[in-house]
Image 1 (tube, rainbow, N blue to C red):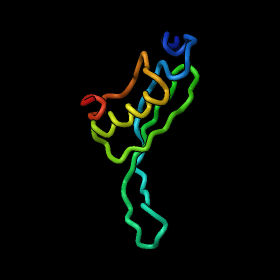
Image 2 (cartoon, helix red, strand yellow; image 1 turned 120 degrees about the horizontal axis):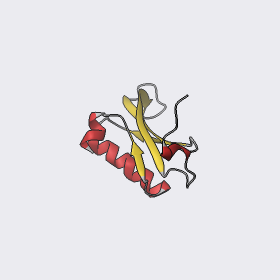
Image 3 (cartoon, helix red, strand yellow; image 1 turned 90 degrees about the vertical axis):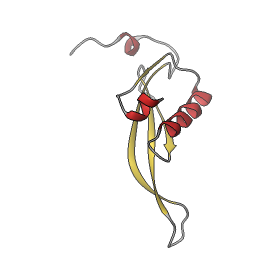
Image 4 (tube, rainbow, N blue to C red; image 1 turned 120 degrees about the vertical axis):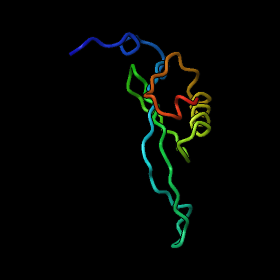
Length: 95
């Protein structure tokens, strides 16, 4: 097994080093009626790299604006991150 990155082995507060990814699409009904409108939704996963805690945010689309709104909600609840790791998705690059 290879060596861990320094951000994965240092102790600190939860969600100081974060990995971000999207999951989905999931189909969501607007209400419980029979003919309720069904729309797509995605989950933005925020994973703490040191203790593997998970924070989930519901996102309506895979755009840069929707990701920035999810990141705003995350930061307002958990605090500002020191280090963020993502893949090279277009919504992450646009942000």
